[in-house]
Length: 350
Image 1 (spheres, rainbow, N blue to C red):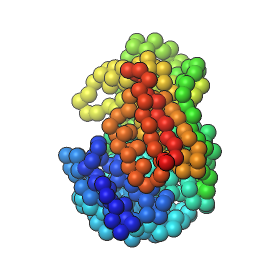
Image 2 (image 1 turned 90 degrees about the vertical axis):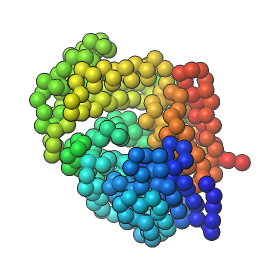
Image 3 (image 1 turned 180 degrees about the vertical axis):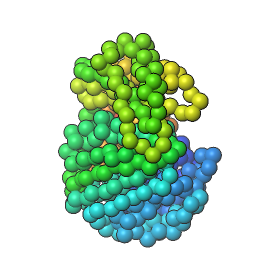
Image 4 (image 1 turned 90 degrees about the horizontal axis):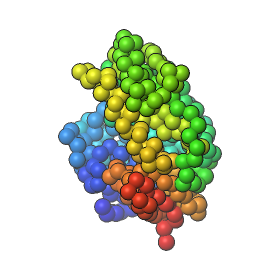
């Protein structure tokens, strides 16, 4: 990675080499007003370059910043992005496939949060995609933490969009101009509530009931803690969400039903993943760890250090931290506390 003519140059094949590099780079180029050139976009993926959801994210952030774009087309492996001032208002951004609309939301969120103003944005596409946290992760895990940091963000699901049919739709209303408060999440605290949601769209209820039967058997949860949720959707879909509320906030683990996969296997894998988080006794799970890095960096830019404790970070998280540090004068420090827990600190560099 290098810098030329004040533009930030990012190699999208480095680290985990996926779409998060693109999304983080676009968001922070917009926040800082720095021109961006990214090459080898999604260079480590089987289908590299811009797919539909990535192109939607590019065009969405281009729209909210009146940006100049070069290379904004399907399969493009290089992109030049020169942002203008961030503007709020009403927008509709449609992926056009089952690609994750929640990831498009995360791309435009941060420049809109930093700039003063109010926005109402409709996102259309995948809301329950196996390659991204589902809509329920936003409402039960991510957004409650953002509100604790002082951010004003509300979301509403109007229609579910499962892979491969897509067709989902949700609305975001937010108020920008508030810098996030520092993050301090070092203890999980007491477990308070737990809930299993077997989500189905255009499928027999028995699929969901079989999944919940596994949850009761594997985790010992009661029938009152397990429920079937039928969603409106364009095509068939199923996801099992296991939610645990603790003093420090919630964690949500998802198992996605796919054609040919036994409902019992989907549930068993989700239960095993949740048990790993419970056994680690950390406040922050793998996906939330990824998504706390940008607000931590924005708080650090204002002189406020942040810290959280999580499971051993994925390559995805470490790559995200590296990309953020290219745009903001922030240093992330990863310290293994033991084999199950890692402390992540963010502070102003220098």
